[in-house]
Structure formats: C-alpha cells, structure tokens
Length: 278
Length: 102
Image (tube, rainbow over all chains, first blue to last red; front, top):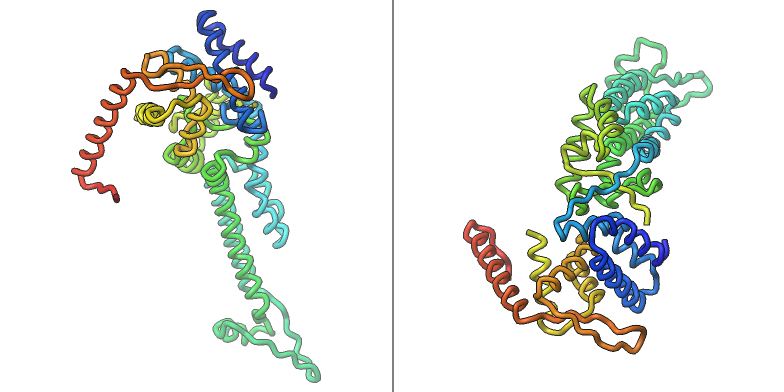
C-alpha cells in the first residue's frame, strides 16, 4: 500500500466520526509523520507496518477520543481457509511418519479431527498401540542354514526365551533401533500437532495459514495479544474446550453469524481476528 | 495502567529536549517493543490537545518544517504527579515483598 492510498483510507474511515476541522488536523499530522519518517527510514512499507492497517489506526485514534468504533473483523471464509492451511501444516510430521510405517489413512483422520486435537490424539494413540503390538511380534525369520549360519545379536532375552518354541521368531537389533527412532518421531509429531497453533502464535504472533490470508489475532481492544490471552485462546479454548463434542460446531455458528465473528475460543480470551492487509 | 505509564515516559523524554513525533515514537518503541506504534502517536497528540505539550515548528534542512513537541509547565506538573504516583506504586509492591534489584 502506498502512502497516498493509506492516507486516503484513513480519511475515508475517519470522516464519518469526526468534524471536518479535526479530520484535517489529524490527516495533516499523519502526513507530516510520513514525511519525517521517510527522512529516517528508507521504506514506506516499514512505516506503514509500524502504524498497522488504516482500520486499526482509526480504531486507536477514535479510542483516544472515547468514540465507539467497531473494527472490521476478518471474513469467516478467510478464517476457514487459514484454518485448513494450518490443519495441513499441523499434520505434516504425522503424515511423514505414517507414510514411513505405511498407514497413510491416519493422516486424513488427524486432519479431519484438527478442530478437536485431543480426538486426533486418541485416534493416534489407538493406532500407535496397534502398531506397537504388531512390532513386538516382528518377524524376521532367521534362516539357519547348516552352511550359512547368520548370527544376530538379540536385545531382549525374554523374547528369546518365549520364541524358543516357535521357529526362529526373534527381534533383530536394527529393527529395535529403528523402532525407537520411529517412536520418538511419532511422539514429536503428535506434540507438534497439538501445539503448532499455540507455539506459532506465541513465537510469531501468527500461524502460517493466517499469515497467508493476511489476517491476525488481536484483543478486542486493538492491543496485540499477550501470553495470557494466547494460553487461554489456544490451550484452554482450542485444545481443551474444543474436545467437548458440540463446541467446535457452536464455534462455527458463532463465527459465521455474530458481528464480531468470534469463535468460542475467541470469546473466552476476548480476542478477534482482524484483517491485516497493509 | 499501561497507557498512564506511556504518557509518563513520553512526557519525561520531552522534558530534556523537544522532539518531533517520529523521534518520540521510535524512542518509546525501542523500550516498549510490543506497544502498538499507532497508539504512541495518538497519545502524543492527545497530550498536546490537553495542553501538556506545545508544538514548535522548526525549519528543517530536508523537506518541510517539522513539528517539535515541547513540554509545558502544566505538562511538567502533570509529569511530576505521575512519577510520584508511580513511585508510590513501586513502594507498595515492595512492601508486599517483591523487591526491585537496583
């Protein structure tokens, strides 16, 4: 956005709320702000980024004057698209693991249950238990040929004991190590799945999906969110509350039909998702 | 509470020398990095409207004359009362047991 466009937007949104004199005063102030800022910084973009979107600036100017002003919240469609992008990002590690161990369909189940991450976790855990059972009776039949005796080091003496009656079913050392690596990666990927949104918002103030759609989470009072709100919104709201079956559905309804377009996790943390287009 | 603190800091920086808007904004932002820059400037404008600062137009070597904000005597009184309030808050917090390392 150029400086001219920015100031035009500012004027458009302000003029219905303040007198002509005020408007001129404010506009000339910000015009000179731009000019002096340009002398310091080399990029108009940085200056505009600092000021925020015109909508946000207008809200803060009017808030100073104690004038009521509702911010334009991001459209539900943008939020849904951002949500789908984030869900895809969250299941990437899980997807990789499931391709490796051959259960790709799991990733789809996790993707669909992303609104309620704990449901996804329970599916995952169930699958992991099944996989675990399978692995513990792994079979690499060691063929013992009278001329070609392949000796392998066996980790678990108990399995050796148990499998002494069976014909050569023993766990191979390499498989055990691989199994452990897979387990660790599996745990890491499920942690990523649950905490992706929380960590992204905490560290970068935004998730990838929201960033691509140019929307951002703010407190309802135009301040940027702090850690308390992020914990409330992401951990309490998205992970815990959303695991109660009907809640994500209610969130969808409130998001589409309320003026502020807030979901349940927005409401409990007093946040809104606004357009960040600059 | 934060808004009051910002006002106090802005007036304090102006106590030494008059500064222009963008300078104030950069200074405050370098210290309070998570404050929305837009609000720094709006607080500055409001302080001016309430008479705590005065605008001086100084010629600049590059471009049009700049608006410099300087603190007024009313502003100084206001700043004084705010710093007193701030100090008493710190004292109360210390009484509860939270110590500030010097």
